[in-house]
Image (tube, rainbow over all chains, first blue to last red; front, side, top):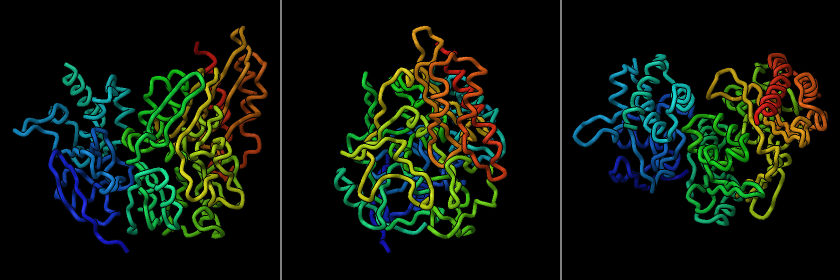
Length: 159
Length: 327
């Protein structure tokens, strides 16, 4: 019915040109068109949080965002979190230190969500972390370690 | 998901005109529309993206009340200092809804347009019968698994629950939906299913929500939204209550009371019988519990959702007692 249309996306500070059908989500554009497979597809219906990315600094779900809607916005994915020399973001380092994952599939979404959660000021207590990280499911049940990692990173970011 | 054309609206008028064409749908946060398009429930020919429109995302609060732009995000309204202090029930309904990511995406206007979470409605491949999706096709929920379905406002055609929290608070405090120049009370904006469950909102093709106005009141200032659910977080309400109270000068006699229920009815459900029964009375636990039973007058269960009839009045009573205690 419709043909592919060219769009420009700003991903992790780099400008990408791609041709996609209007129905293509930001998640599929990242994974299938740009080879950025760090962002995971879990439920594809906005229920699991595995596809969490930042758009203009806000954590959102890439599976319910059309790629076309992200045009003109700054998108950050898990690939854009570490520094250029490979130094990990404080949240990434805390996840390693606290062993905050088992299979790792939900981890990129957890980390992107946690970075925003701390920035929003919603990591003040374990209860608050649980509430504001509730949109990221972990089927391995690593939740206690995830909360510990977010708490540790929040303290490090604050100091 | 079937493909569609994508159009980015540059003005409200352009959005309205584009959305008036057959097969066109407005796209804001996308948390309902894209999800339901993937389910095969909505099949737009054209989506009209309104998220790039300017000036529709502001929140202003003064002594008259609040005016919330249709494109304000749920998260920013929930965190707004004036909304928190003057309309706590609105802030609490918002932050207890969905997840942080969804609240960053979903807009206030889009929130009012969200569809039911009835699993039969959401699954056309396995359940072709749904009067909300396909008028006249029947209701797969009646006689099915009904644990989440409504007990109030149902009809023979549909028992789907209205899932939202925000609108419950809006209905309690007489909020007004602004559709450009036209204004309509939130209570009238949401329609009962009756024989036409496919028609959920009093909005016509080519109309667009531009803002929500909430009049200031003492009851809104002393209010809460209590949400009871199967999980502590990131879950729809089994029963929810938006409640606000204003006392007489003695600090004990109820002067004004607002009560609305969520999660148990086919639309946000104002419980005026509870309000009237308690006005002029002292706020005492036994009186409140008795009056709260009026909240589910006329309730009809469909088996597995019978617990809601017992739960809803308890949630109402707890919310009234909670908001009555706080100074």
